[in-house]
Length: 126
Image (cartoon, rainbow, N blue to C red):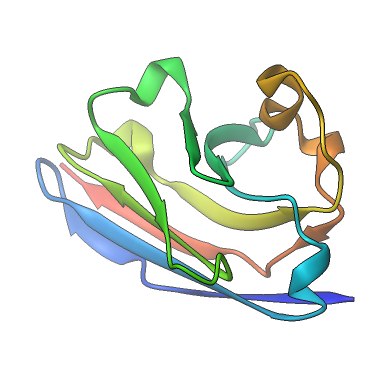
């Protein structure tokens, strides 16, 4: 089992930045990747960014604004998003995968991730 604990988030003004952190505990040695997804009201959960080994993946819609990083032990995943807009308002979820795929495209899907955090609300005010 892997447990994920998110921190950060809250109310941010448009144009500002946010930094979210996710700490994994438990059988972290079984993880192959960690990721961030977000879900706005009435919308499906969407991929934000993932990190697997030393490779970082970022959603096309957020490239240039979002970065994901991990610690040396690969048990934390930090997400920074700059130039926030009201459309970035969502619950942000941390996720961990136990699966390894040769193709990075699998890591954009919620189905790849077995463990999820409780989510942290990010609200961007205009």
